Length: 285
Image 1 (cartoon, helix red, strand yellow):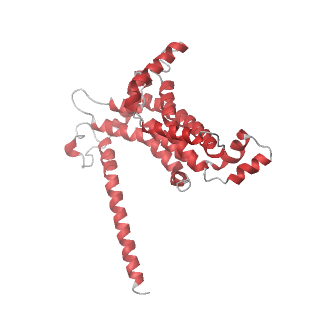
Image 2 (spheres, rainbow, N blue to C red):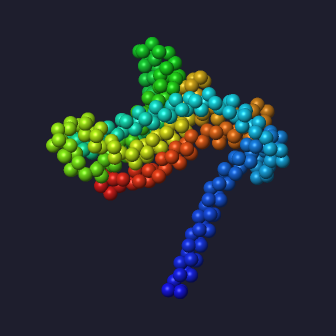
Image 3 (tube, rainbow, N blue to C red):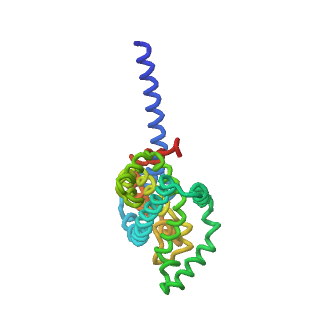
């Protein structure tokens, strides 16, 4: 026992050192972002990236906020409804494909999965044509093509395969006896979904919300092609923060931190459900 205890402490110490080393390496970019964001433009250059500011100033944060605020609001209008719609559609699809079997269900699920492997670049031209056609059909110029609603539609449709897969694999773990008991009690498909399945779906909902919110918030390609200047989200606005004669590194660093805060908050608030929901159904699904 006396020999084993010191060996265990050594292993624990080694693991702790390794973890601390990984944390330090992970936080190095965060350190550069923070210290550079508080530097005046005269100090903010790559040659002084590791140095603390000689003169601390929040001017870069003020300018970054003024330039980025419209894009942040557009990103909220994009990510929040897009995540909720993707979650609702994925949940209903996963429920039907896992608990209400019908002829051809497996073929339909396979077709859903094929959608995960279609690259963005491969659908850009037909997607633009579709959204332009919706503008002409509805008479709402600048709404579908050129506006946030069209960008939300594109991401929701593109997110259906992965959202369906996550919910379907999670719902497979729900005992079939619960569904059968609800049928015996006279509950139909929607009543069973609302009263039995949805209340236990929190882990899967957290996974889908995190996944879709991050995807929508960080989108750049769709945003550049499908929206106009008035509807640009934070990623496009962040790309446009650049000077004509010199690059305003402090403003770019401050803007990068501001644009990353929402996704970090989502992970902090829902992170404890993430792995639980992601791994649910891994053996049965």
